[in-house]
Amino acid sequence: MGNFQRINYKELNSRQQENYNFQKVAGRLADYGFNCLRLTDDWQGADFIACHIDGETFLKIQLKGRLVIDKKYIGKNIFIAFFHDENCYVYPHDEFLDALTDLGKLGVCGSSGLWEAKGIRSWPQPPSWAIQLLFEYKI
Image (cartoon, rainbow, N blue to C red; front, side, top):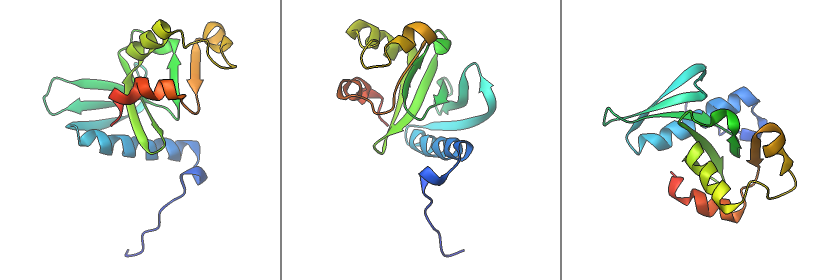
């Protein structure tokens, strides 16, 4: 098995992309002392649990393909993980939502009605202000 060939992420189906992203996030979290356990189905909104070596810290993490906030995660102590430009971000959903609310950023861009109508807001390409907010959550 000497000839490994890199895959093209964009050629993977959605399930394969989710598996790929889990492995990538888990690898990065390992550098911070976390062991990641994949769940067979969403449990309390989480795709996986990250358990820290301190034996006390457990993160419920939802994998996403982009920066997102969603009312269904409010109050569930969920972290959102996503990649952008080779960077991985793992941010606490409710804390980030509070920061967006304080800055008045929920109504920015053409899809501003989605938050009010459906309780979801996402950015396929995070704006520069969002990257600044996310800086402390980059792993």
